[in-house]
Length: 373
Ligand code: NDP
Ligand code: MG
Image 1 (cartoon, helix red, strand yellow):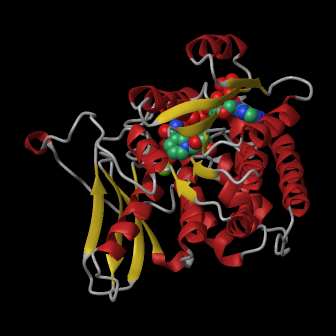
Image 2 (cartoon, protein in one colour):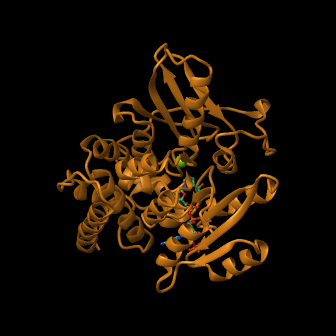
């Protein structure tokens, strides 16, 4: 039996890589649901290419409801959530409610509502398989670690690698005047615009610190970030005997997507392999003064409640304002920092409380942005 797969955000970077894996591996997979939000023409083309899949365009009146209904009706075996931003949360919740396993690229889901999402997945007996390359690597390393029977050794630390983005070598002064165009030139990964800007400010790594804490149930102190400009080592775990295990491959999101779709099995994948004859790997400490989004994320996760949700909302609003030339690049962490000074300590167990905090944090951010502009 082929696995029935839903691809949410099929017109995006993750969506396209997912459809590529599904067509390469058509003996294992079939696409049963394909969604898009603004690219109607592209969705029409996908309809022709995938005639048996249900196609949903969510970017019109009532579109969001249609998307949720489709997830419920189609009942996929596994759903890839490649929607960008906070908009992905509702779809993740609907996926879990529908009893479909969730291959999660949309990290915002876990950052905004980790507690709620993980509890619901547990109740519905649904597996969340990370697609974010770092978390996919850690997920695989933890699985390998337990099967190697070295689990008397505890996992002491998760080490997330970060490319450092296009501004790694700029001084703080030089970063004052960078443009969205500059921030969109990522050195190693080709991704959608929001996550690319987040990589430049290292907010992406901030979100990933929070994602790792939630997914792997580890305190923020045990999540380390190391800058690794080549993006070959996708992440590492350090065991209590001091030994570190790493996962390496060329930077290509089809690796984690393929792994997630096959879970709990594994299968071969024929992509470009690493050539050690022409490989240099570098590692350096992240500069937290240049990239305050890193420490703001660790603080948010330590404070708990809805701080992480507020971090995500403030950053999303600030990134939009930066793309629209209302604020400067270094204002992104300033705005996020000011929003996080408010009290977000609220405990939550329902979606409504999360969405209210998300919307409150956005209002706060917009107020600050308007004062700056
Ligand atoms: P893109 O911007 O390339 O694609 C986003 C997709 O989501 C598009 O298909 C878009 O539709 C759809 N979409 C946008 N807004 C909405 C909405 N409100 N409701 C429903 N669908 C919507 O993003 P990426 O593929 O780069 O990223 C997707 C997610 O995966 C993000 O959460 C990102 O952090 C995460 N991720 C991405 C990686 C990457 O390599 N790209 C790596 C790791 C994580 P349309 O195009 O029709 O507007
Ligand atoms: Mg990542």
